[in-house]
Amino acid sequence: MTTRGEFSSRIGFILAASGSAVGLGNIWGFPAQVASNGGAAFVLMYLILAFLLAYPVLMAEFLIGRATESNVVDALGKVSKGLSGRLVGMWGIVTVSLILAFYGIVGGWMLAYTLEAVASLAGLEETAQWLVSQSVSRNIIFCGLFMLLTVGIVSGGVVKGIERWSVRLMPTLFAIMILLFGYVMTQDGAVDGLKVYLLPDFSQVLNPDLLISAMGQAFFSMSLGVGTMLIYGSYVSHKENLPKLGAAVSLIDIGVAVLAGLLIIPAMYVALHNGVQIFAEDGRLLAEDTLIFAVLPSLFDTMGLVGLFVALAFFLLMSIASLTSSISMLEVPVSYVVENKNVSRHKAVWLIAAIIFAASVIIILNFSTLFGFVIALTTRYSQPLLGLMLCIFAGWVWKRNEILQELKKGDSNAEHSLFWRIWPWYVRFVCPVVILLMFYRSL
Image 1: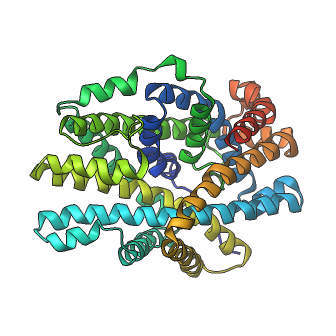
Image 2 (image 1 turned 90 degrees about the vertical axis):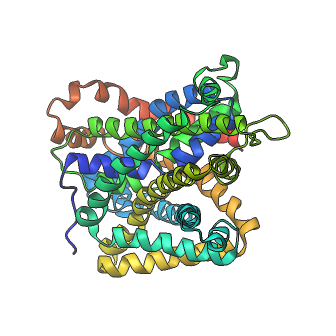
């Protein structure tokens, strides 16, 4: 049996778990969702749903992980004391592996666009052009490169790999975001974007489509349901107060999403001021890949030489965000293979990364059919259902007394805390009903 790793410090855990949560879901997904769902009304509902739905499910994952000190399959097996938990764990591993398969492709694009800015600065025009062209060769090469970076970090283990790099990458990510925000706000047109972002249209607040998008965004951005938070929770010391750690992770995650919106929505209006088209035919703001790979690069082009440095900083930011999430995704199947099949970590990391990379290549070769399909299958359908299963395990299957004993390890007065008064019934009744309602609407 391999000895399990454990985070060496509280800040290491918070930054690693926040890094898992802070990914393209926040920096690409959130502003794109804001852009296509009526601006500030979406921001408001996202903030509410992130705390009402995502935080309780996050706590279910942390608690199950730390109490069982196991990978996702064994952890849910111990809680359910049967096969049902193990099957849900396997479903989580398949889902997270499929998410990483498409995430690796997008992470590769971010690396390519980062290097494009470097190539342009060096005057290598042909190379720069190839780096931003949608070609099969570029997609496979950069997806492979991105997976290699992920492998390099995860093979180092919990402390020397995941924690060491999270502590370096997350502060860098914050610094780049704040510098970029400061720069964008000095540009003409930024204030118009800020108004769209911060002043809600209250008539849109209860729009069912907006609510479904906000719930999906909260789930996806906190990497819930697929075992990443469960596995990080399993590496936390029993002395730590989990509800406080969970709140810190949620706040950083939400903070980065809000900051990303503060950066990107004003940047879109700067682009509009500079003559770049930011609206589609139907009057909606352009979102998602069009936003990241067409609108913003067009904006950087209008800035002259300084635009190359801004592009470099922006796509470096996106690459870091991709990487902090991909390492947590790879850790989910790796921990299972290491603990269950008694394979060395190094071998497990390479083996699983190779399988996921092969899946990425299949998606690249059948891009128009598979890319959107895999994203919808995993993030719109599988993730909320896995979140629902976690609520059922934490709320109905796992004995309340066992949960309380786990909480007491980090806080001797846990049974008198506000968390304990609300969370058990909330995760039992409220979360499952809301997730089911939202899921039904999304169908």
